[in-house]
Image 1: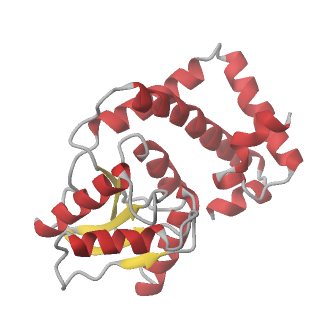
Image 2 (image 1 turned 60 degrees about the horizontal axis):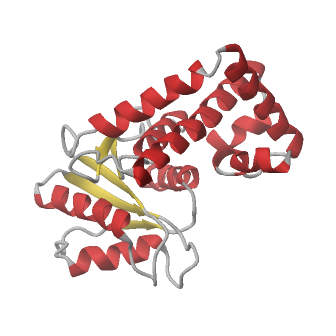
Length: 236
């Protein structure tokens, strides 16, 4: 049972009790069984569409939330560099109000956000653009929760400003779903890569993302339906 619950110990479920994880696993398992697996195929279609169709720029100037990724030797690896390069291109195009680099320490000496800032400065980030660093998180949900706190601190009493979520295509569906659960109602996805290239690595990531998005969405929908405050606490 512990191996089956392992995927639920991330994101919204990190601090959930074991019985809560079992509860979610039973609900998702029942949905899979009753639909003969079609529910997962539905989420796979959602993941595919977001990954394949996301634009390369927001429709208008807005705040950018740039998601980090685990560093290699305290430096951004390939996927993270693509995310940073997309953000930098948007800055040069005049499409950015403010930039937030998201990501805490994931095993290195510095945070993902700090490494991202160093990369941007080395590649021509204008001095006028001073990104805010969110360095307290190590997963996508906490990235967004802490970014939300920064945005609310900057604009107390105002509605959440529209944001663009900048990350790899395979990662966008999860981030978009979590952003909407957290109240980023005006969020739009922005893809790091020019287009979705299907190789073995990306195909496996999309399949895994579909399963993970299904766990998150069905579990939170069920928790909201039955008023399970403990499970909903992480997305409030």
